[in-house]
Length: 86
Image 1 (tube, rainbow, N blue to C red):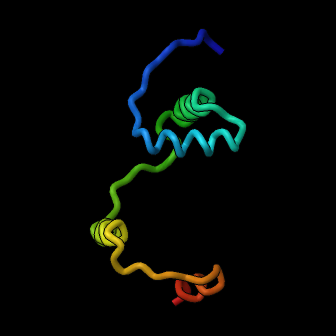
Image 2 (cartoon, rainbow, N blue to C red; image 1 turned 90 degrees about the vertical axis):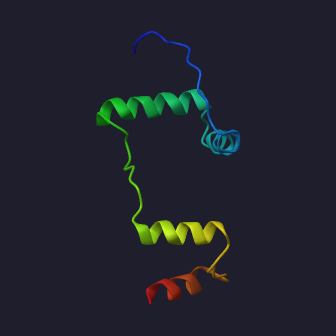
Image 3 (cartoon, rainbow, N blue to C red; image 1 turned 45 degrees about the vertical axis):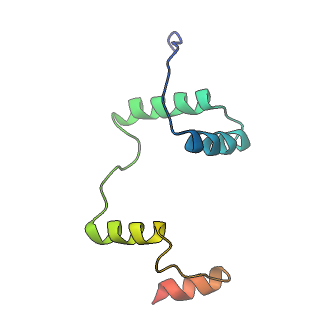
């Protein structure tokens, strides 16, 4: 492993706080997680997950969900499985 460098990132505060809590539960800090991400970029020769623009129908559904439209409350996992089976 090479020498360490110092870098500064601008990130959304809410996302950062939520991610930090998750990382803490995993026993990692943000710096360690970022180093893992950088290593995976190097290994994959690119972003280590798919990044794409959703199709028009998916974009419409996402917008509706964010506005609270067409949402269904489900009591438990079995009921959810029944709904998505159809």
